Length: 491
Image (spheres, rainbow, N blue to C red):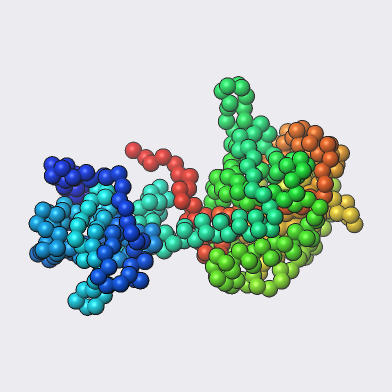
């Protein structure tokens, strides 16, 4: 078997021969008449012009067969020296698996009666210098798959189809929102304050203004400022960035859809979310039952055709741990009880009470939440941007959708009282100054906007990467992100 260096040189030599023949190995264009999947409907004897990448090739004397593949499918073409002429047939010796090939030809059948394009002219559309992965094995190196997704897409149709379905899923999400009266908008990615979520930001520097800035962790506050400006239903397909730990269920750059609605509350939002999910999933996947991989790695069957039950987070924590988190006002007191129950939390001295309750929930409750459910009424420390509950001011009018231990979306009735919001943000800023980097920063511009007056608002943010990985049975987010973040290759 020739080594890769020799094969690459052989391909370079064949490229040079094309140039010597006066042929461009990388031409500007090719006008095709059909995609390859459309050839099944073309009548025998009809002229066609098609193109694609050579995935298989077989030469038998004065006859050459190629399997071409394009975005939509694959099809066989055959070239006879008598049909294309001796000069054009010379290309057969200069073609390699992986090259892009265009053909003019006529629809016909082969000896076994299978449809084939009989070629009247071969045209090189792109010479491949690097060999493709082996046909039967594809790319086996996981790091190479993530670093060179184009190689994975060519060699694995399953991977190609999954990524194409992701784009269809995202498009269907947007269309449903637009059909429901939402306007898609854009808000800043570079901001001066890390706001809209509790997370550690990426920090950069604006040279012209000589000021530090951050990549947004969420578009939330800007979108709600647009509601304050008079829009009643807005959403954004947002790239967000969080400079936190890396594992199969977290990626520091991710895509989410976030929307906000005026004059509605979180209960309306839960009802709308169920309708949204059923409609989008049915349109995208043609089903509402899915085989999913949970946070613990186990496989489960989930059914989204049924009504989604709703549970209070404080009730679930108490059932699982015996801890009533509503009894605690100070983080240090909750830490003592957690430690007495052998619930370990890193850097407990730096965490505020909202972060501690969240970690308690994630440690003791969320892994066992398999069937889809709404987790409601987080404490106000956990949701600094959420409206207080009318019946219990310690709780927020909030909910999360959890499936198989994964948090799929985060939602609430928005806090629109500027006095309450200012107090909560200042308390969060104190936690942050004490070392809790996942607490909110004080956003004076947001508070000033709220003081101008906001209507009742509800909304949510849904991570596209996470829910799509879940619904397609992928345990690693990197398997549904075209080009995940990777360290530079070692020399």
